[in-house]
Length: 157
Ligand SMILES: [Zn+2]
Image (cartoon, rainbow, N blue to C red; front, side, top):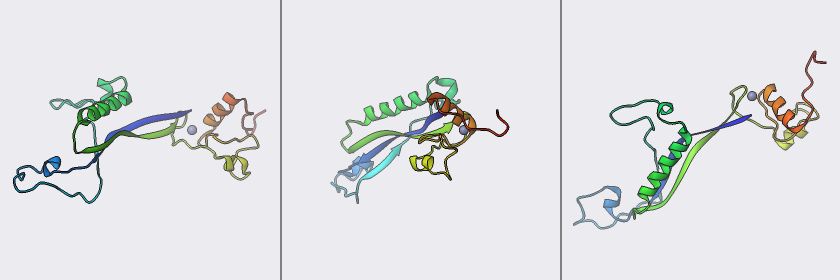
């Protein structure tokens, strides 16, 4: 079965600074008024690790039963806090999704419609689009769920 994990949570922040102080360039207000960025400035704001408390640090699993959800909420809190800042043009919460096979642990891959229809890349005549491409356990599971005949095996009756 396809297992999806989400990590590397971050808030993408696009800045549109107008004044030097918008970028922390303070102390020059009496001599400078505007700044001119060459284009949109987008930075990734990374949430503090769940298990990091400054005075102590432990694994995320010790402090959270829903690590993905807690990181997402932490990012949403960052967005809520920064929302009213005038130098911010746009924000979005994003993460990296990784799909792995629950049986063999390798990266999840599926046959495309072309591969399933092509004799040289399909497993047998029953292959369909979306069939896993990593291990027999995943293929068996996929086929069992859909009532597709299982792969013929050497020596099997
Ligand atoms: Zn697999």
